[in-house]
Length: 418
Image 1 (cartoon, rainbow, N blue to C red):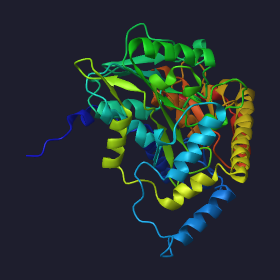
Image 2: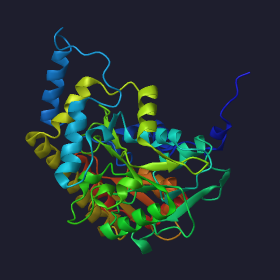
Image 3: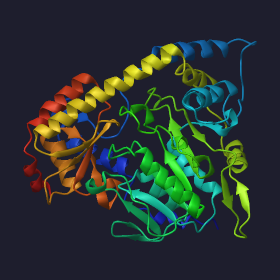
C-alpha cells in the first residue's frame, strides 16, 4: 500500500496564483468581448525581450552544441565554473563581500531552491515568516510537515512576523527564540526595503539564537536608494548565519530560460540533536548533486553574458524601464485617492484599499470594472487583508493604459463585490 504525504491535505485552497488564473479564466469565458482589454498586472512575469548580449551568448552556445569539439553533455550540477566565478566576482567580491566561487550553487529558480533547502534541515525547527509573505515560504513548510493545522490567518506552529505600514513593512525581531527565519528584501509583495541597521539587528539575533536566515534577494537589482544593502552578506557576521537566494528572472528577464543561484557559505553551521555543529555547505552540495542535473549550458552562457559590460548596461536599462512603469502606476493610484507603498526600490506597488473592503473584493472590482488583473493582498497572509499588489512588469503601452484606468476609478464601488 502506497501512503500519501498527508501534510499536503493541510494546504489551504489552491496556491494563490493558480486561483487568480482560475478567476481570470472564468471572467474571460463569461465576457469574451473584453478579452483584448484585459491588462495583467498580477503575476510578476517580465514582458520585455532578453538583453541582446544574452541572445548572442545563447546563439554562440547553441552553435557550440552542434560541433564535436565544443559539444557538452552533462555539466556540473552545481554550475559551470565560468558562471560561478562571474557571479562571485561581480555580485559579491567587486562589492567588498568575501564569497568564494564554490559557495555559489546555480539552479533553475530561487523558488525551487527556497523549497528544496528545507531538505537539509531537521523536523521540529521553529520557523518565522513575514506576514504578508511570498506564499512559497509557507506552503513548502506545510508540505514538509513543519506546521500544524491551518487556523485563522495561517498555520499552527509558524511564527508570523507582522509587516504593516506602522513598521514600514519591515518585521520586528520576534520576542521568542526561532530557528529558521525567512526574510525577503526588496520585499515581495510590499516593495519595502530593509536598512543596514535593520538587517544588522537580524544578523545579531540569528547569531545569538544560532538561527539561520533564509534571505531572498531576487529583486536586489531594483534597489535605487543609496545605502540600502543589496545582499545580507554586506552585514558583518552574516556568513555565519545566512543563506542567500538570487535569480536572473527579474534582472535579466530569465523567467522563461530559468536560471538562479543560492549562496551557502562554508562557515555556516547548524546543529545535530546532540548539539554538535555541522557545516551546511557539504549537505547542500550533496543535495544539489543528488536531486538536480544542472542548468543547460546555453542558459548558463546567457547568464554569464549579464556580467559583461554590455550586458550590465542592458540590464540597467531593463530595470529602469520597469521602474518607470512603477512610477506611472504609483502616481495613478495616488490620483485615485489611495495609500500606496513600494514601487521605489522594487517593481511592486502595494496599495491599501478603502476601509472595510476585502482584498478579493478589490481584485474582483478591478477585474470586472477596469479589466485589470492584480494580486489580492490577503493571498500573501492575514496582514495583507485590505491591500492589493500591482506588478510593474508590463509593456509601456499597457502600463500607461492601466494607469489611466486606475486613476479614474472610484474604489468605494468595490464594496458591491464583498
